[in-house]
Image (cartoon, rainbow, N blue to C red):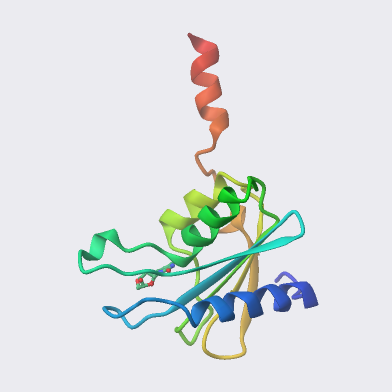
Length: 140
Ligand code: THU
């Protein structure tokens, strides 16, 4: 198991702060995320919608905010949800995040004190990344 650092816990605190802003009137499951990129923090929360499929996850919200600030390489992300066990990023968010560093550190927390740390490539082995598209271009 990966050791948990003070920096992990600090990033998780930013995710918990974002979780307070979650808009989750349908599921009641509040999620917060915080990305560490180039020395800065970018937060996101889940934003649900009456058309359920239009809901946006906290992780992708944070990623949008980081990209808007010009950051396209993420060192780490912290995710916290209302589950007892640490909340893991959904499959769609794993793929979305892999674009910005397939090996980023992923810190996960839940309602309790238990914290889990992993890397994105452990959570999503063999992600589809831009290298595959370049191979296609080279074959033309
Ligand atoms: N959710 C996230 O924000 N991130 C995830 O990785 C998993 C799910 C949100 C979406 C929805 O608002 C609620 O959690 C229940 O699925």
